[in-house]
Image (cartoon, rainbow, N blue to C red; front, top):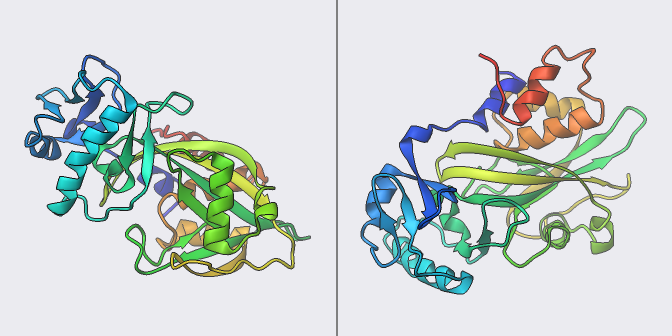
Length: 288
């Protein structure tokens, strides 16, 4: 395996297997629905206008609350039928791009089925040493729906509707790693990574907001909920080697860890032959 293999896995989907999910009368897609799931949505003609070309929310539902409510009715029925396996009880605000006003709320567990843009926060918790930065690595609980038992960041989480990014960082840091709010608030936004890939749960169409959080050498994170088993402090070189040579990390961790290694000069153009390909691959550009 290689770094590029990890990047390609996060930028892998077949558009011909999907049709756009849109607001009726608008061309810009909100998301992407498989043809099979589109046929299932024909069972909800009050909620979805389904054609061979697209799945649309009807124009008569003209405001945020109305769209959100009518959509939730259908999603709850799909969940009861087992087609949304896990109801998370957490809504995402759905928009075409970050910064645009959300058009409706959607239950988090349904988001990959509609391929809509989802946002999340990913925090690189690191310690500065004479030998270079070391990263805190979390091990996900084995009961997690996505990537059970895989290695992960210090803190990461989806972005709920109605919560600011930094507020979410502070919340997730407390819940997952027992990081005090004052310390978590020192996290610095350092970029964002967009990717689209097919996963078991559906189409992941994500924008990951990346944060760096420098931690004191004497701080040891502790799991504070049932989502993380443990934390370990690794030299970044060890993180990169394990990421490159195994499938032990959650799939999208590769993007954020490589982004960290580039920014901190650990992967440098003089020593990494694939440097340009990695930089381009982070944004989904690959040469044949």
